[in-house]
Length: 603
Image 1 (cartoon, rainbow, N blue to C red):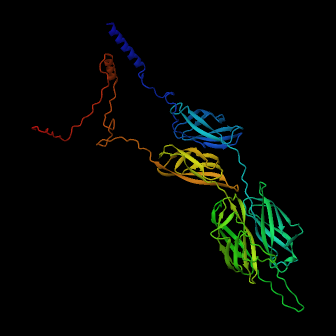
Image 2 (cartoon, helix red, strand yellow):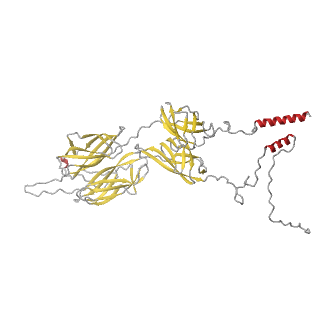
Image 3 (cartoon, one colour):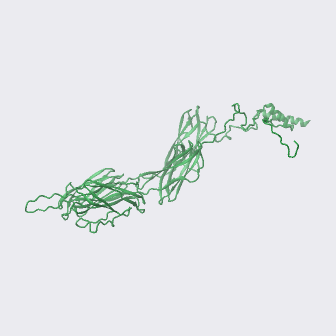
């Protein structure tokens, strides 16, 4: 009797406790401990998450909060946690924010880079926004910002390049023993300004008067021209010659103070000698004189690098008054004159020409051009190779023209052209591992790697990854110095927007040998698949959704309180207290299966 009374009291105690809290034993929801990573519903964050700054500077980030819901979202507080052991100070302008419905709010974060920060070091800071009036109180949304420490590089200096635009000696042939004024027009075809330009004259055929042979030009800007004039005296020893040359040396410096010296050879026409007798004679006319010049030139490959094979396209014009016959072009110069101004005997010798930096290919350095009449021109395209040992810089290539005039005199015109040689980095962009499968709308990682394939150390700038059909984040990084065969890796995040082949454009910036900004662009393609399709609701023969499991299992009916209480009493007394299971309908076979008689039987 006492045992029965005890079980009855125990039963009523259990029932009383369950009535006071009918959800005892059921997992509680909406508690802070069980939903620690809920994001604020309807709140999105956008920010330029990677920036650079020098030591002792503040890097500012403008964070935009967008509320897509129809109710205001209040945020308090805004917390900051430096990740991976970072110690740089990070602060925001406010910790209490109200984002209006269908509106935006802005927060400014600042990262103070300490004075002792090493170039290339960085800190990742996590900024967390906690909602106080969102649908789920206490929900948070975080964003990471990455700050890199750099040292400001000095501004690139552009190189000047001064060449002779034109020159004249008064328009008439020069008489030996008399003075004349030589006017030379210089032009700066380089990208930088030429400073402290000094023009000097060298040689004994023409003697400078009045200035000592030195003319100074303090400044010549890029693309500007200047004309210098020098009074010269033609040496009487030139009597009987038809032309003579004068060497002009030009030195100048760039904005950084680096000096450059160039030499130009100018050809001056001389008057033919006149002879007089006691009887009056007709004055002989001045003989015609051809003059060959290179009026324009270009290469079919730009820029030129060590080991490059290229074609040099030359436009050659006869600016004289006579025809040049049997003209031969000597690449690299090397043709010498005797005292009478004619080539040495033994034909044309070009074996001493300077081809150490630009060597001819396919033929020798002697190119036959034929006859070139006055005021006409020809084109020549010799092929060259840049020596692999040539360092980056501006190099002069001497070109000589050897020909005869109408009287059979052998003459030479020497000129210089300037070619620029670069040594550009050779890098390759690819994946350092298989990136795996990509799906539309799902975030994935891009394992990008930049490799230096050249034989020299390359100093690279920023690498940036962009795409027209995908959202790429953590997509900017400073590559820095890459040794030969060295590499740099970057793990970027990508969310494809369309299926199919998506192009990723990788741009790497650098500064070339003439301090001009350049960039290398390469494209990587990734294959993107459509997102997996979620299971849909199964429809019955009548077109209505089938209740319960799509596989055919009926859903258990909801249990009433009375049914549950009855199962509890059965459980106390040791009876079957399991919930009632729904009946599985059995379908009768639509066709009768005949029974086959056993072997040897009688049916």
